[in-house]
Image (cartoon, rainbow, N blue to C red):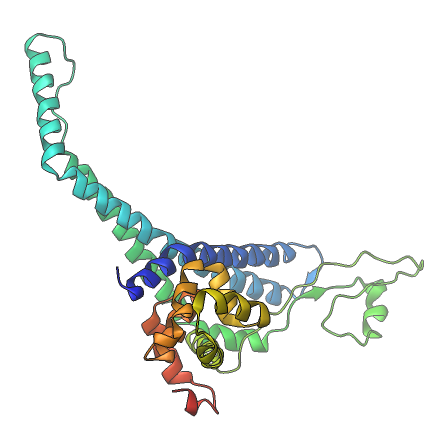
Length: 313
């Protein structure tokens, strides 16, 4: 197996768990935001309704992305099951089973009225079902993300809900300098009212789509990796001895942090002196870290390369 194939295999096997964990953390955060909107006394109602719809939409997008991470593995399993079910050995076992049913019928011992279908029929159905689920999730996610810019604009112009006061508490709110933020309200008795949970405003990069934000982040990572690899290259003369020394000397290097999460990647960093292209290794390491393909990282680098990175390739 080539070095590139090995690194791609590591990316597939080791980064999926990290990607799923990140998506599930996002899901938990959105669920918490939705729960805050259930607090009594929040208003205005139009803001509560908008933010509820916004977070429900974000929740659906995250759930679809989790499905799109998990379903390819299920497709691989179904493909393997179909291949196995279509093998000569499985067909022979099926024919033998059918023959036993026929013999049982002839002797009056079998209550089965029909023969079971060939095993590849059920395997093919399972495979088609999972492929259909993947395509449905993919199309639905595309449908939702197509309106991201529109929702982002509404989000920028809609203030988050805030606790509403009773008529007796109105002066306390009017005198507050923290307009738009949850406030501890004081009644005429002097007792403090419990603080209502705040509803955060999601951060949205001005005029940038999700793809642009991800592209810029990946390009910035590549630039950092190229700089680190260029610094390590002349010092990695005896890999097995120099690698641990350089790692201890440069604990903040992103290269070493990626290799710590994906040990197989360290073998490629140790052979950095033999690499004809530092950029290619940087793409591969960034791909492992971001959970995407090296070609996706390369495209992001060429499109969103930070200013001042011309000498980096």
